[in-house]
Length: 367
Image 1 (cartoon, rainbow, N blue to C red):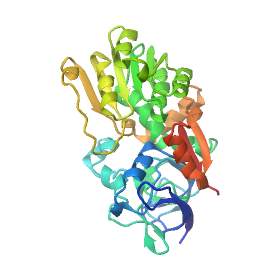
Image 2: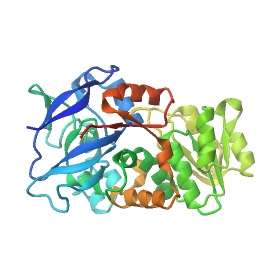
Image 3: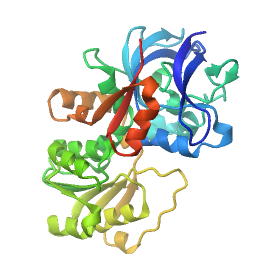
Image 4: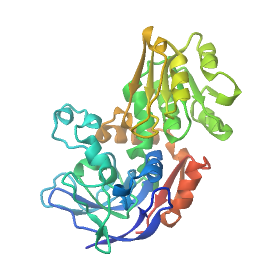
């Protein structure tokens, strides 16, 4: 049984334990991937803070990039040696998957958040004790993972894995929310609330889409400055005044679109208040599955819409290559968001992300 270095959550709210674990061989319909790099996402940090006793110990991570090392006998289309980026899990069999609505797969929650395969088993263990895993179908905080070939997107081998890893979730979520979900017309306006890796990816995507006015709302001055460098036309400090009113002024009546990347009541309220009529607000901010928000119905009655977006409404097989192509063209410089750490310093990386010292931390694994 292969062994792997992994960062394991053993207690809620505690630092991850970097240790050696066992990884079972892939089943007939699975593949084993050597993870070279994994992004750290706000969702990982959220689970670390809220995991219940039955979820522990847990191997998290869901922005992996690496190399296929073993292929189950029934797997086609993937070969040993393929360079891959990993994204979210879906069943590939339900009516929603048949319609190409993979982010709305009927088994999405079970396959991505249950801590196990669909049958309840896990490929991960430590000294004979099973570990919760298969987070987003992968658990890329382990240097070796077992996953479904549906999770894999084959990529060229000329780009480093630490660059590619965040495409599987955070960058895809922000860019996809703009290019897929909102699909703004050239010359339109977009306000982005929160300039972390998701929000800044949205800013870059809005520039790709040809938005004439791109407004970032962010409390950290260095993030506002970066947003302006990446394509925002304006950057607002929410502590400096009524951001929604200022957006209405800057857009001469309200933004055509807004993207809410925080998930807090006040932020969502402002993302709706700043809209023109008609206008659309997409929310991707995650503060836990149970997160009650109260809005004023009057913000919706006059032609405004609120839509929740998962994973940028993206089909990773199509969207990840699209982002890579835009990057090669110099139009989507998401590399500017990334800071790398060796996996042994994963807790330092998480702390840096939590306190805003870095935008998108990525941990790397030894070969």
